[in-house]
Image (cartoon, rainbow, N blue to C red; front, side):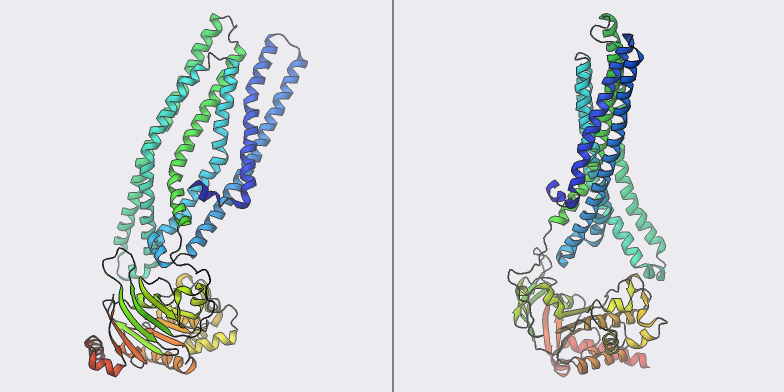
Length: 581
């Protein structure tokens, strides 16, 4: 895990090294100050003059200034290293996620990935800061102070040997009990984020159905689960403070009692007043170091689970990768499904698609229709290799899609989903996702083709109209037409419309289809639709049922031989006539 995360330090490695080195210097200086102070006290007791006292005073001032300088520099380098590490870590996580296939995203869930990029990275950043600063400082302080205490009085140092194991054993049991709870809590964090994300994105639906109270209760339940988990863990970690206080007081009591006794019984031969005061200072430094170590352990117990979750993402390899010698040119828009079967999971009992044999010629218009769960979307996702087939092969331009360079393939296959997404920015900026170099004239021509130009010009700012996050300031039909225009700007060899005209009226739908036939006759068009009217003029129509091809043919042929197609047609026509009445 450390090896995986350490790769994200990169250009901040120097700062990460300098911080602990400077801290080591700071600790050495701080541990020297009590020793020099003890020497000063002895000189005073011996009746030394002001020259001697001033000399030791100047030494202490210099040591204090060095300690301050080292502390400031260490803090600076630690902050630079920790913030830079977190920045690189987010970068690496984000770029890893961009390479994920749909199957990888399904594995982690959207909310889980958001939690990792935010909460988990913050915990790991704090842990890294503590590791390169406090985690270095405390053990060094502990060792240096212990060595100096032994140097002052070996017999009195036995008190530290009694207290330190007691504290270490107590901390071990505290952390051992708390860590499994944190592991569970972070999973509940994912559930909480999922609840918030779902509620915010579906706010209009929530208000439309007056379900605010239900959503509040759902959020409160998820929030309470997180709070209960943290409360349980914090109750255990809270034992750290009384344990530390007990050890601190016990050590001070032992030092005071045995130290005083040693001074009196040996008449300051084994330990003098100056050494006694130094021992008290070293005892405080040792216990403060142990207290900080306990805080570090608490922090690390929380961050270890976060670090583990981050490593899961960083180590995850996309199931879909480029071949060693990828093909970088798509010859034409032909599509062949050769004995294709597909399952979303290898352990799934039922296949999403089974024994699919289908050939689509270049420039052909193919309609795909079927009930919910029949496999329509699964079918088209295999063409642009968003998923890989479980059996058989999908070929585009006569080449297996697994042999193509991924960018090349996806540049030539444009997919417009029913719920496609618009991003924050102007309409032009959104459309140029299809072609960053598209001219204004080309954008307007494509928008006329997608029946979007008229409503865009009705906006006060036209093509410079700002789209809010998620495209909430345009209607569903307008959003779909903008997404169609964006896909067309890619000039693909294959255009897939996944029920992407469901929010437009039948007249606009017909105009879009006519424009496709006239303007892009050489582009292969695959139209998934619920309405028969959207596909009845296609060169052929595929009827899917339960992941299999039930029938295939023209509208007239399917009306004769496909009971499923005929049933859909009759129900829609009946509905239409009743509406007309």
